Amino acid sequence: MSLRIAIIGGGTAGWMAANLLAHRWGAGKAQITLVEAPEIATIGVGEGSTPTLKRFFEVLGIAEEEWMPACCATYKAGIRFQGWSPASGVAQYSHPFLTQLDLHTEEAFTLNCGNRRLGLDVPTAPGDFLLGGVLAARGKAPLAPAHFPFRMEYGYHFDAALLGRFLRDCATAGGVTHHQAKVQDIIRDDLGAIAAVMTDRAGRIEADYFVDCTGFAALLMRGALDVPFVSFRSNMFNDAAVVLPTPAAAPVPVETTATALSHGWAWSIPLTNRNGNGYVFSTDFLTADAAEQELRATLGMLDSPVEARHLSFHTGQLARHWEQNCLAVGLAQGFVEPLEATALHLVLNTVDLFMDHLERGNFTPQYRDAFNAVITDRVERVRDYIVAHYKLNTRDDSDYWHANRDNDLLSDPLLHILDTWFRRGDLAALLARQPGLSHFTSASWNCLLAGYGAFPPLAEAQREDVDFYRSRDLARFLDGCSLNFPSHGDALAQMKKVAA
Ligand SMILES: Cc1cc2nc3c(=O)[nH]c(=O)nc-3n(C[C@H](O)[C@H](O)[C@H](O)COP(=O)(O)OP(=O)(O)OC[C@H]3O[C@@H](n4cnc5c(N)ncnc54)[C@H](O)[C@@H]3O)c2cc1C
Image (cartoon, rainbow, N blue to C red; front, side, top):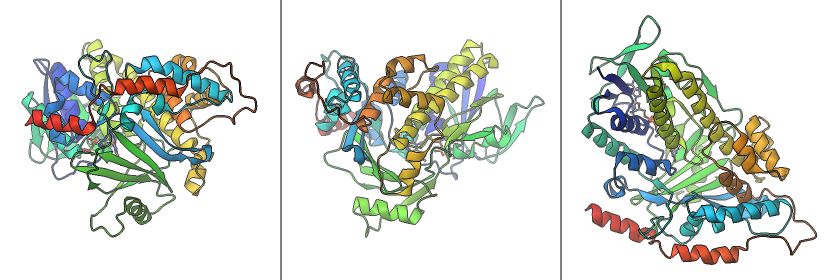
């Protein structure tokens, strides 16, 4: 008999999980059901991705022409950070996703960062060394022509509601049974596992495995199974966001912008039909009204009748992401705040790793503890990377930024990374020694630390003989490469034509 899997929740996480499970196990190995309560809204944000979303669609065999126009999606070559470290003289920097070509320029970037850490005056702006940064600066889509010999990595911006609908249609077409019903009760068996959920419109739904995708409610994991939640609040201060759309930008940027404001930061996410904007802040330091006013002022919308949407969230993760016969995915498993847009990336990681571990254990919970250890570590390393953005800020305009800078509750792995950087040690070697596989490589850390200008003062005596890369030489090379790529506007228009 095939495995019965019931997914509870139809947000982006629920439908992504449904597609991945159906793709890998659908034909004969598993019967998959998804239950969602239409009267409980999805969170409705989460519109930027990492390159993991590209791999997700590749695994499912869905071409960009099929899903991007349907979701008002655009390409994302990276994130531009503005105003996070003004005191070190860096007004903004670009943190591009690394492509295969960057294997050739990354060395130059790392070498220059190393020399700058010694006090030498060498260029270190990440966007000047990495192809994605150059493409973003020139408004080019990261779409390599067939003859370009390197694989491109990039993410997307998309409308979350439209993506949810698109994924729902794919999943149901792939054999997933869909019920619109509210889970009202959760029945456990004698050993404490979940035997069934009771719904208002679809009756009793039994399964061998349940996937909790009920968002922050975590109805099954926290509500029924009592799995503790480990909060990150002590070193991640943000707990709220205010969201306001503006008309689509022209030309459409190829990167997310993350701009530091008085008590947090604002995202700008370019879609084809609108621009998504939101201010992420801490209610310990700023009221929701004041945040809305500041965002409106930033967007030139002080007198606009467009209504803002307010959200609250808590950062942290479940003590165990797989408990008994239940897996948590999406906001139900935890949240690390939206900077770096890693939530959907972790959704995809979680489902993939769950399937790997379940298969490895011959569909028994044999590797449950191993799975929990891996996911917990991944979430913590993402948290560390984001915490570093706050810890390293050099803003002086509010208590919020001072408190972030004074935050001493850093994990040991993060302390080691910062210590190695400032002691001029070998970051790549340190990261290779740290257990687990972080999404953020040593190149990502170099981007962040160099982007912030986290360097010692320049040495009085500069050396002429030192080996470093001049950005002028690289600029010529990367400029030449960029000629192969279409403008973002042309790429999106062409895709729309093909889709029609
Ligand atoms: C401010 C903010 C910005 C973000 N930005 C990004 C970003 O740029 N990139 C990124 O990757 N992520 C981002 N995220 C995270 C992202 O929004 C979520 O990870 C993603 O939307 C998945 O949400 P979800 O499906 O887990 O939960 P939800 O969207 O909340 O869905 C929960 C589902 O559970 C169902 N449900 C709840 N209770 C019941 C019940 N009793 N019975 C049946 N169904 C039930 C609801 O109907 C709904 O379908 C952001 C989050 C926030 C808060």
